[in-house]
Image 1 (cartoon, rainbow, N blue to C red):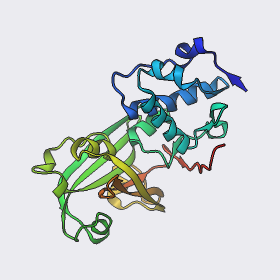
Image 2 (spheres, one colour; image 1 turned 60 degrees about the horizontal axis):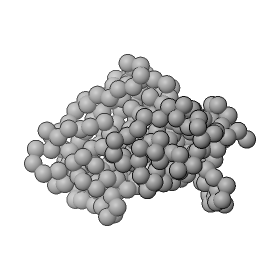
Image 3 (cartoon, rainbow, N blue to C red; image 1 turned 30 degrees about the vertical axis):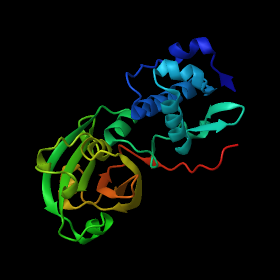
Image 4 (cartoon, rainbow, N blue to C red; image 1 turned 60 degrees about the vertical axis):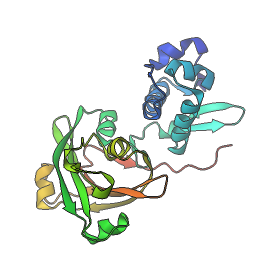
Length: 258
């Protein structure tokens, strides 16, 4: 098993320091680092003492990010031995357990990715979405429709529903950001703590087929997420339809490390 030397950390990892203890940035940089090191056959990560100054973040932020990668199954942390890359997960592109914007997932899949806001308006919740958000049917919600492009072609269509009562006045004027997670953290305060997802294959509606430039006979992967904060309040529902020619998901199930 190959390992890296302390003096090679900066050169091998090519890390860009972050100015604040931004958990998301650190987590994403560590994911990229895992891919780069794994491609070089280096399966043992540098120590926290090396990574913390290389990233320019506190040990607490670093540990949180490492824990996220451990939960995703990308690394293993073995007591008294170190932190190791899970070589069997190196070929996994998008992990269904990851919390990330589709534009980032498409970028990691090798595409020039971008996001467009197709619509942003207040609607009345249907019964299923109202139940998921613990509201009455007909309650107002901000609906954000996004299209994620891969190399200039539409790859993912998503619709967010956020209770209007959580957003104050003029929710239609709020910056929709790149993803549900960023929108919630920016405009609702506490970020999403976890999401519950339903996954199923579906045939596209005529509107979806047109939005994604596909025939009506081509199946899509439908992800329906309910996003929940740490206080156990559901704050958003996301329904995403994904063309698996651009993005395929895997699931890594993790168990206890030693």
